[in-house]
Length: 160
Image (tube, rainbow, N blue to C red; front, side):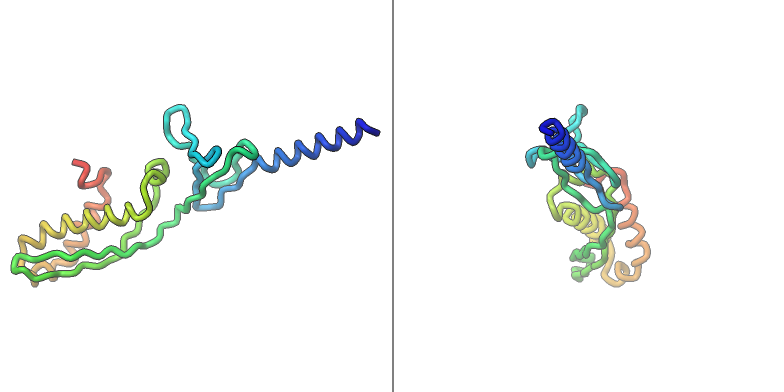
């Protein structure tokens, strides 16, 4: 009878450990593995990223930080001055997808929007400074194409 109780107890502990070792990452999300509240790095020195679906972790010591991959439009607004000193306010929505989770998780909240705003302001400031206000406003389609090109570069414009 005593061995039966010990056996059932061990099986119960095994089931609890197994269930605590499973974590399900929701669809359109990724997670960073944490151990004792510190992010875990792999052998290459990059943070351990868990993709969506069922993943296994060490029970009781490991946890995960979940991040959404859904693209959410963020408002971007900049002021630039034309050649004839007319102040022009340009507003729009910026939308991006996270294609490099290992880099994204190292950024502080709001850094992406700040960098996008700085890149847009820099490029529009260059163009606006060479044109008068009316010409700048009429060339909306060209400015939109310029902004899209700058934001789709493989490296940030301020990288160089």
